[in-house]
Amino acid sequence: MSKRDYYEVLGVAKTASEDELKKAYRKLARKYHPDVNRDNPKEAEEKFKEVNEAYEILSNAERRAQYDQFGHTAFDAANGGGGFGGAGAGGFSDIFDMFFGQAGFGFGGGRQAGPERGADLRYDMEISFEDAAFGLETEIQVPRTEDCGTCQGSGAAPGTHPETCPECRGTGQVQVTQNTPFGRMVNVRSCERCRGEGKIVKTPCKECNGRGKTRVKRKIKIKVPGGVDNGSRLRVAHEGEAGQRGGPPGDLYVYLFVKQHKLFTREGNDVVCEVPINFVQAALGDEIEVPTLDGRVKLKVPEGTQTGTVFRIKDKGIPHLRGHGRGDQHVRVKIVTPKKLTDRQKELLQEFAKAGGVEPTSEEKGFFKKFKNVFSVL
Image (cartoon, rainbow, N blue to C red; front, side, top):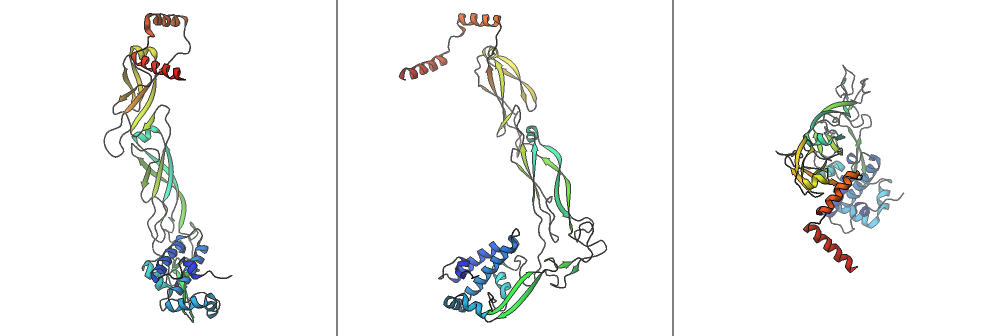
């Protein structure tokens, strides 16, 4: 299978400057490094090697000139079908250090991967409208990975200890060096014997089978503050997955989903509800009881109230999440027209109509006039 053109691999033109080559290499090396492509490490590793090979040839003026003149053929013949040489005495490790610093990605000669923070966890939690308003303390059960309690995360049976890997001498990595006509090739890979850990467990812990980790369901206390809304997120520090090689655990993020209420809806920190009244109450006025989050309160409905009128009850809304005070409650009244009337009720309404009770108000007259004018045009 023929190789891709080195300029194509790096995504640069043949006239690219040294800085352009370096910028392209750095971007692709980060993109395809195996440590950041754990879902598909083999494919990432191949692309990573291809990018490194292209840069090591093109970053050397002499070898770049030879490549531009002869292409892949001469290079492959000179290397026995191999790819790239080294980058001088330091090889690939020096190039990687130059771009990414001594910390690197746990890649390079003689550097063992250090402590790694555990992954964060997500937990979706459904709460009531009232709990969102006033808060609650509860306990949730979260499945997660923890250090084995029997071996304390070492993977070794009690009374024993992991030993330094003799293959990589505790670095977790091995180097294979090969001299070629174009320099020295240094290939660095994870140690297969210890799987990159740098240590070998000869007597595995029976509880975790030498993994050092166990899967458990942990009960965690959660405090939900008053005033949270649908989609709010709570962070519980250090309650995520266990870290690797002595690293700290991740965090737990609790996402809140608020159930719909039968009576109330929320608008910011205000609460809105609709209350039915009859036309007698609307016409003559009345004092009615309305529900709130704190229980029932009395509300005075003035005479002549129209349907859709909204009344405000101060400080009966949702508490402010970051501050003092509460929102208000808005009560929208809806006049309900009875569907069935007794003969006596009909008689009284007819008397009311004859007495002039159905004469339109000035506001209604204006509306009817506009209505009539519109239809006269049609």
